[in-house]
Image 1 (cartoon, rainbow, N blue to C red):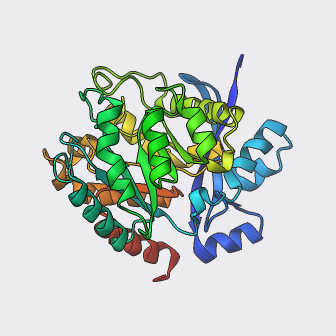
Image 2: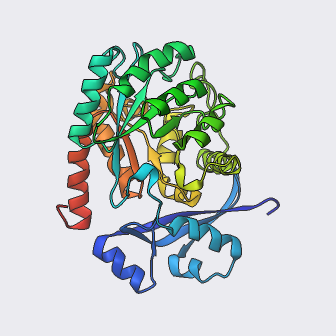
Length: 355
């Protein structure tokens, strides 16, 4: 097939002691170097919209001798580096703090420094390893916020979190806000534009030593949900993120400082979001930690109701567990305590441990 590319989607997932034994017996391969393994995988060849899919055992893929496949399997199986100093022996939670008047779920609840700092402390105490501070809503239909206004919202909050037992992330597309955030104590840049909105932000991330989350979005927040279209949403999002990782590395940002987010809800229909969530394992082929942000998003309403964001929390727990079951390392959530409880039950059920 002309221009064909290889993709691998691990299936036949195993957990805990079963996974460890299967890897030792060479009948399974580790997923991102963690406690999950895969006994089989779909080998996808082609281009988005025109592919051939075949299923092989993991051992057969490992023995194929194809150099391109071997390189892809190496990315899928390699243990992830400690992103922003955080380990991934289990999924970690990124708690959301929107210092905005208009975010889709909690706009106006934490739009003062005092309220936002208190909420961030609550999230950290509940088990968030990261707290993500944002001052510009990127909900569907939202308008951009001037950099000065955005900085005025988030920088006092970040500065007020000194000593917090969680890593601080600044959620912004703008170089000046990212720089000020780093100076105030942020260690992670969470950029919904994957470093494409502001050309100066790459330099900021590199010079400040920030770890970076690269997210996929189709279009601008104002219009991204008008009519999103893809020939194959999973492969197109993969290709975009792979290209953005390559561009970041070429700019001098080490791959160990990168994570990738498929961008659920950002220029996607219900079907697109479900396809991405169902195919999370394929994105391990990017070779970086995966962040999944499904919390309270509208696609949950499309499945089971919940016209307002808060009642979508049970669906958010289910989405987090589905992502964790596929090896996602970072889960971005509103309700840290509830998500932690849901994941603890999931983990105990599949790993046979309470730890």
